Amino acid sequence: MSSLTRFEPIDDFFPEFFRRMARPLSLDAGLPAEIRVDISENAKEYLVSAEIPGARKDDIRVSIDGNVVSIEAEIRKDVEDKHAKDGRALLRETWRGSFSRVFTLGQEVDDKAAVAKLEDGVLRLTLPKRAGSGRKLLAIQ
Image (cartoon, rainbow, N blue to C red; front, side, top):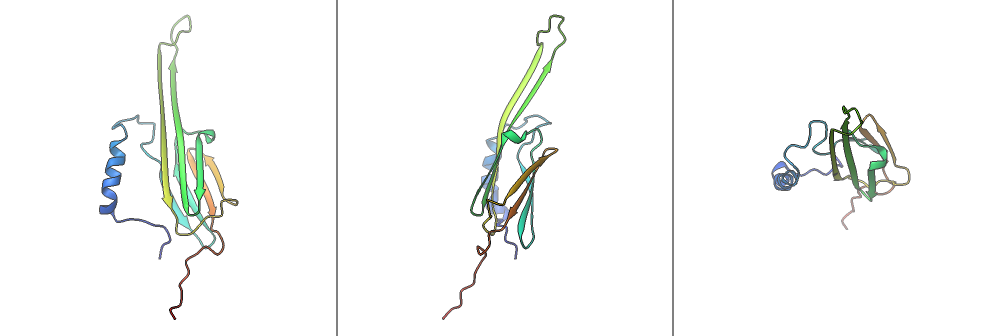
């Protein structure tokens, strides 16, 4: 049995529908519409890869509360085109946006031993499972 909690697609339809409605329909081809994640696990830890292109490590916040993991990022896209002789900016397009993703894992995470690394727009989280916080079946007397 997988310890990652996932709901049925029909149950997720309406929250996902409204979440997408809150975003602009077309942001920019170079900017993500959301943070996409891949989550895997082994006996000792969860491994998370989150695609956050354009984000700098100073603009990403990861928080852990028990078995709930939250990733927030602010992405800034600044493009400046200078063609004037006196150096005036003829075109400046600036875009800023905040993105977040929250997910629940099947077991609590040892937040003191967790590690986050950002490489080439991919945030990699190593989240060790907290000892003794797994599921326990009680014997019925």
